[in-house]
Length: 483
Image 1 (tube, rainbow, N blue to C red):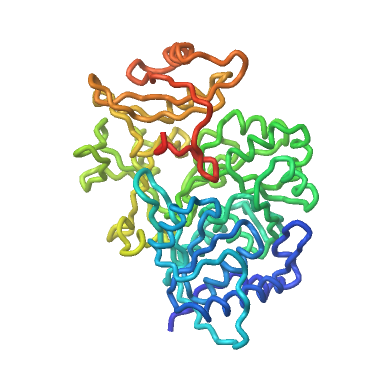
Image 2 (image 1 turned 30 degrees about the vertical axis):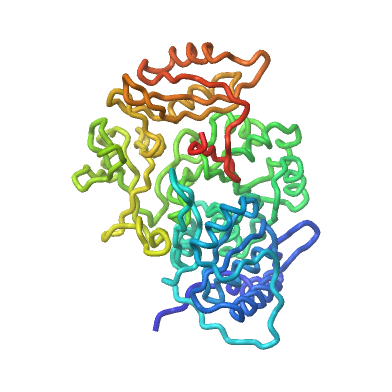
C-alpha cells in the first residue's frame, strides 16, 4: 500500500508543537494551533467539495491563507492560489479554466459533523499555479504533493544549510506565486521554523519587522533588496541575517554590491520556474558570493544545455527544441566551452504538465525544456542569457534582450529598461528599448544610443524610447507582453 503524501504542518506540530509557526502583526500562532486550524479548514472544505475538486484561494499572505492552503491539501483537494489583485477578467479566467467549485476569500465555518479524511497519495495533484508564460492566457501548472516535497528535499541537501529549524523567515513574496508559496511558506513548514508574514511589502515597515522578530532569513525578490539598500537603517538591521535569498528575477550587480557593503553579507541567487516547484539552481551550491551567475543545479536536479552550435534556434517562426540538438552535460559543456543553449531539466520536482490534460509537460524520459537560454562559464556556473521566446533575430544573428538591458541599466541615469523585438523591413527584426530615465537632466534617446554604440556590436544596437514606467507583475517582473 502506497504511503500517504507528507503533511508538513502535522509533522511540524508533532515535532515542535509550542514553537511559533507564523507571526502576523501581534498574532503568534504555534504549530499545534496552526495544525488545529488546518484540520478545521480541511473539514470545512471536505464538507463542501469532493476529492480532487479544485479550490480557489483569493487571500493575501495571512494566517488564513496558510490554514486554508494546507487544509485544502489535507482534505485531498487541489489548491488554486490566485492573486487577490487580479482584475475580474483574470480571476474569472483562472476559476473557469481550473473548474474550481469553491472560492475562499475568508475562513469557512467548521461543520458540526467531523469526518475522517482519506490522506492524499504523493502522486495526487496538490496545486494548480497559473503562470502566464510568454503569450496567451495563463496556464495552470500541475504540481503534485511529491513534486512540492521533492524541492524541499533537494534544497535540504545543500551544505551548509540555507534554512534550518531555528530560523525566523520573512515571508513577503506573495503566496500565489510558486516562490512565495513553496520556497517561502512551504519551507517554513518543512523545517518547522517560524515565518513572519508580510501582506503588503513596505521597505521601512519590513525592516522594523526584521528587527522586532529577529528575522534570520529573507526570501526576497530584487525590488525588495533594492528598496532596503536605499534606507540608512538597512545596514544595521540586515547585518543580523544568516541567509538572504533572491529569486524570481535577475538581481542587478549594483544592488548586490550595495547590500554587501551595508551588511557584510552576500545574497544567494536562485533560479527556477513555477513548473519546477520552483527552484532548479542556486549559487548556494557553487560560489555564494557570485552575482553574475545562477549557480549550479540543486542536488537531485539533472540539467542539460541543448545547442545546435549555430545561430538558428527557430523553425517556422517559432522556437523549437529538436531531437537532433546536441545534448551537453553541464560538466562536459564547461570543459568544452559552449555557446548559449537551452536549459533542459529532469527531476522529481517537475510538474505534471499543464491543466487539464498534462500537455507541455516532461517528455517520456522525464526531460523538460525550460525555454531559458544559458551558458556555462569557466568556473562551471550557469549564466542566464534570456528567454528563448524573447530571442531577437537580426539578419539571422542572435540578439539577446538581456544583454542590451544590462548595458542600458548600467547607465548612471537609467532606472530600468526592457528590450523587445519589433519588425524591421531590412533586417527582419530589430531590438527596441523602453527606458525609464532617472537623474537631472535625464538622458535623451540619442545619448543612450551613443552610449550603447560603444558597448554593443552594431547589429545589437536598439532604437530607444523613453517612458515614464514599465508594466510589472506582483513580484516585480517586467511584463514584456504588454509592451
